[in-house]
Image 1 (tube, helix red, strand yellow):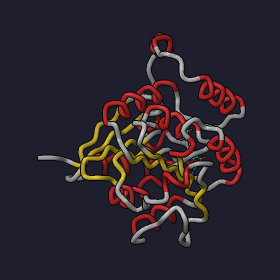
Image 2 (spheres, rainbow, N blue to C red):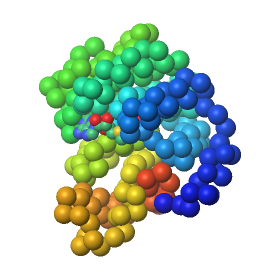
Image 3 (tube, helix red, strand yellow):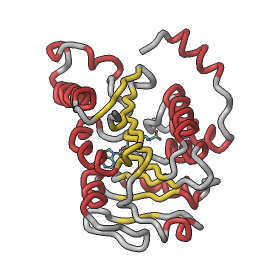
Image 4 (tube, rainbow, N blue to C red):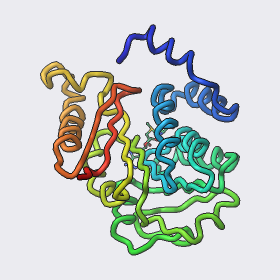
Length: 247
Ligand SMILES: C[S@@+](CC[C@H](N)C(=O)[O-])C[C@H]1O[C@@H](n2cnc3c(N)ncnc32)[C@H](O)[C@@H]1O
């Protein structure tokens, strides 16, 4: 959404990522797996270093790039749980997590996010040792059992990153707000839809109209809900940053 010349220049200022992330990013791009873009990466890294969250929840793992990226920049004693439902993403995600430098701090919650989030909100606790209907499996890479065994996935999260099916954001929102800690930060990716969010619905192809309308509803809710404080940045494909309002 910003001039390609400026984007290119900003990218040139970015320091290199660790080699395993560079390789993972290259492979994901080659295989056309959608992953967060460079400027979105930089914003996430900055927010993680500023906020220093201890419990992170991600909705939309794909092959694990953003999860491993966040694990690299989160505090040493933080944990990150990530949700994915599609088998062709889950298989490589498990392989990637198994070899991640901070594998023991990662948990992959397998199932449809609508179901998994409902379970996390409604169950008293969900321990790494068991699952509930709707949460098909909890995959923990080697060494992760000892880190996660005391934790319940139903405890509040102080950083939530949503990067899944855009049309479902509105359905996920009530659950995510229940799971967000009072001083937590909630980041939503892809809210500007390559800029087309600003276009009239009549100029949007019929096929994309529902998603256009749903994203507009979602952004309206984030920006007009009296309990929330939101800013929308034209970074990546548009990122909304939300906290609970404080007085
Ligand atoms: C844009 S990709 C995530 C990219 C990833 N965050 C990254 O940057 O490396 C979105 C992912 O969300 C998953 N997804 C979409 N809808 C979902 C749902 N309802 N439940 C769980 N996962 C979902 C898709 O299968 C896809 O892998």
